[in-house]
Length: 186
Image (cartoon, rainbow, N blue to C red; front, side, top):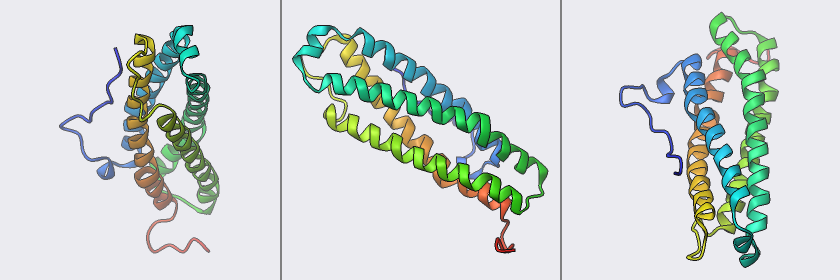
């Protein structure tokens, strides 16, 4: 059964209203958990597609290669966030004191994460084009259909995940390092 995109709790605050630690928890607990689950299921579905389907559509082997690429990229990306960037953001948020060294520490990884978001978006767009917007052909086996359903769910969640990071988390993190009225030039 395909994964459903996680929905926010009706009692939760909008992401933009959350402090950095709570926003990190939201991203980790919803988007990262969901991505790991759906990527695992996508790989299972891809491996189970019958050879007859693979032979019937010349695009399908490219879809499977792109699924493997987006899975690898996303898992590596989330590991970098969880192991390197997010702990530093938590530390800066908890300290209440930020300095020029903090900016030098967080700016390059944030820029790297944004580039990786762009790559993941490009891979998902390529998959969207290859699959006709994740639509299964009439003849598709159940595993093929499920893969496309999982891809659609992953693409939808990833768009929201990336939006929260690029438009909310990263600006908030940079604002911690450079509070309003403080001159980053020194």
